[in-house]
Image (cartoon, rainbow, N blue to C red):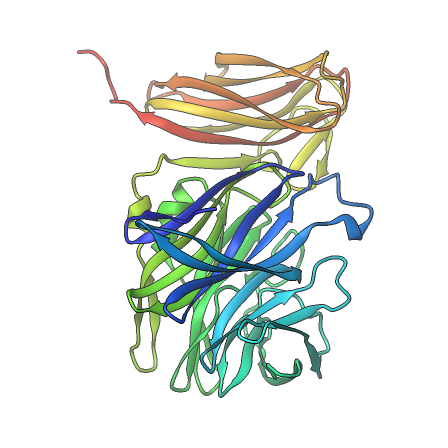
Length: 441
């Protein structure tokens, strides 16, 4: 495990596979002249393969002290804190405190871990009549742990770092409360640890538009309880590189400047995918009454452009049923997905089709292709057969050059021959090389 230098920040990239432990979701703090992090080591599972026994679920919180090796960061000390999910770490009266939600098998919903004393304390909040949830945003509240619980309503908790006893300090109903369509929970959700400037609290949260799309935003709350939220375009270079989920995890000030931490993934955590864990250089603008955070992602501007389209937003010409998450399952011959009929700039591309089939691997169950299309006409650029997967999720890649005339658009398709149920999940497009509009006179 190694955070390598990128620009003026650091990154740790890992290609994860369902069934194999992955280290991700690093939240950082600067303490005693070094970076310290709390992160999650867990095993992902496929959407239809949830563990039937919660005790077999692996999701642990680890603490790491990092040291510099050349320009990079490498682990210097590591501790296993205990089972849990999505930690946040913050300095409380000069000592690092970690807040995290318990894992599936944990007896308690939320925990507090004191790094200095190596103490794990269960949290019990009196007067909290709703679910504990997760993604609490901690901050120093005069020596106690303050925590923004959520945005609907905007609720602040006070928790004793010694006993874990907590109470609801304040709660303000938001005049707007958009709901995510897939789970009906509040769309605006927690993110990095909060900062306090005078009587104004501020920080970074994330908006969950879909299970596979989290977009960061800045929030600010004044002494009157008025809450303002604004979209931040700082993360666009990373979003444009195909990371649909960006979860802010930390805001920290060090002897070498300020940083923002984030966990970026290609989509929701039930599929093989790439994780990008980053520490990005940032500026904390301490304007009275309107503080804000500026994040420098310029080091990612040159990454290949990529995007993901899920099966549920594409068309099909046969009956199907929705499958978690954003997938379509069909049981007869026909197109399980096709579209999106969009223009695409000249270049060399990789199209990655994700699917599963109940057929055995020895049998062909359909095909996928990339086509150039205009009204009443379509021609396949490349077509690849799909083999049975025995119910497991597989990905098939097609690499090809796309150079479309102005009147044509591209189309991606998964076809089932009907021998067994087939589920189409998504297609990911990555531009590997940009080509000129024309290669001749």
